[in-house]
Image 1 (cartoon, helix red, strand yellow):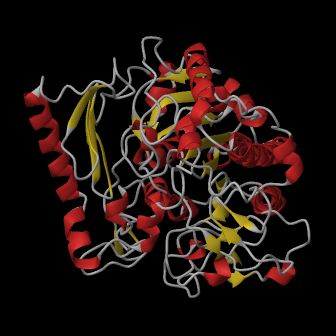
Image 2 (cartoon, helix red, strand yellow):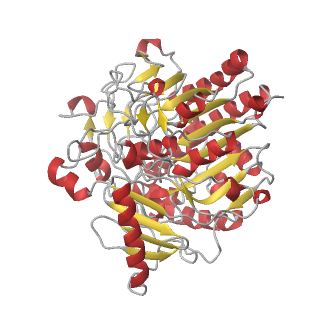
Image 3 (tube, helix red, strand yellow):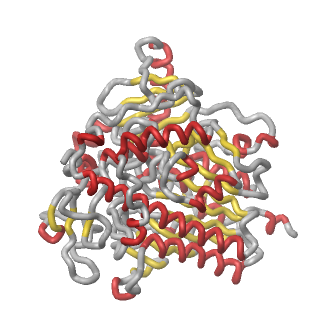
Length: 546
């Protein structure tokens, strides 16, 4: 076997809006046997972090930079000259571009969401950023039965081309498995990189009725009991120290016993759980493809989420009556039914004719044991499950690593494992140096002493944080800094800012240095000159207290 053939394949699987404790091997009650299998045969990380939001996390994950450096500091709206451009710039290079230049086949199935130009090539489409083949959606959230911007390579796929039983989660999985089979059939001597970006379990709450009914009764006891049960399972799994305190219920969420429409509320979470299980079944098909081709043992397979559970609401009303509907929200179903958008007990989620989210109470459950949700950089917004399965590369199976890492470290690890250097320039583009640190030493105790802890930084919508070792400085815009000792207070319940002003100053200085170097645009500047785009301000809209 040549050195080329020994290089590992890489399969990178990203869930969308999945909370820290949703899947079974992270304390959840949702059925995820395939992810549990990967965890049992691989490694879990208890303190891996994303960047709190979909597009920024994808930009950071694929480039090894912080999202602001790539041109995507918020989402994909062009806010220039006073904000971010909203699509991948020429100063970054994707892991697909790097690996393809070193002989890898490169494939993507799923959600891209790294450009707002979904009707024309702009230099930031998947096939323009290193992927040999692409199947999926260019935009963000969409229907699971008929998503907007569905594309193969650069060709749009029309509604008429979809079979009657087509479902996006299944299509993502099936195409990913097909990419594995096709690569082995045509390029068996070359390694491959496969990026699988699910939209599950992002809203809308769409799932087949049988999948939803499989969870009948599981959520009838409500979020209070389920948060406590998840906490105990997190202790049992060894993911949290048993001295960790469970955060209080979100202050905007009523106790379950005082919550009206409990049957409808339980149905919302049943549908969310069904979305996760459907994704897990698809991951099983990808695993089967790798096994049948004899590639599983030599594949570094990574699973994580792009942000914490989402507390986002939905405006009420029929989409075809909306004054300014989002272009990715279908006005009619494939059968001509009107689509009703919003969270109301009058509408049972699941069918294509609905467009709903699961609400703040269930998001609070998804993010157990932490505070806050998607978009914030407190632990509830940025902590993610992280599983790596790589039999040929890991010397221990079923282990947990507690060192802190974040998204730029993923590409650093992949390039370390594949023995590929990050380029100084690419196709004439002056590329920024990578920001990440390889996790191979963290993963594998056989490699020697782990590298010293590095500084981690975050910013999104003005929410900001910096972590050095045990200390994390964090603020929710426009509030003051809070300081937490994550070794003893992972759930950020005991603010020590007043007790340790020198640490606050030290970390705040480190954050400002990072923000300046990484082109973070002050939130006040964006709001002053451009206002807040509708896609941002919709986060807390809706009727979550109904």
